[in-house]
Image 1 (cartoon, rainbow, N blue to C red):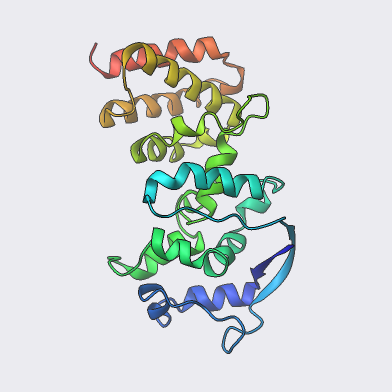
Image 2 (image 1 turned 90 degrees about the vertical axis):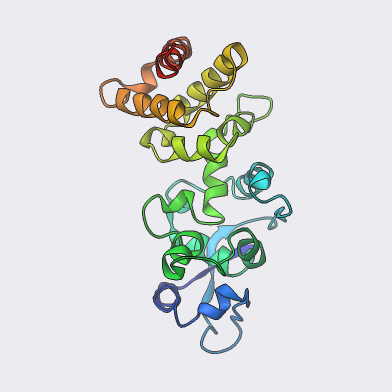
Length: 243
């Protein structure tokens, strides 16, 4: 089936009137695209999907891993260019996955409704692709997907081990480099098996990730073999923990 997306005009209209439509977000009232002023807002795109997977919500953030696998698997054919289109994700948030988004990202206690909705329902603003309710799930899967592994999503559990781990990594530019990220997550997992959790130490882990991001400015990360990355992670883990 073809995925329906908001027309550019409809996208701009709804996103510019978030305050006017605040009851939809705060009261979890569904947008009815068959009546005015929303009739004709959704049109068929060139993107096809066999079915829209159900998403788990009962466990909140703990369900991100299984949901990321489901969304990325269903939309596996998307190019990164297509997946960077905010209209695609905003459309899914406001239609197929409206109930999921309203429960995963409730707006009733949002400090600034407009900002909150822009980030989680529209994919606008800094780091929007990893904050939009559905886009983030696809990009989590895309970041780690490795067809050479028995389980292509094997490293997703490392990336999403904690909210801090995910945030610290995906606010850095190197997360878009799948090969390097895969080597880093593999090395991180190995170091944690040897010396205990690294990602649970917030300050130290952020320092480690920042160091790697800085390293990317002076070396071509793609050229670093996994053993070299493992040595770097070991060294930085010791240094950042004061060892």
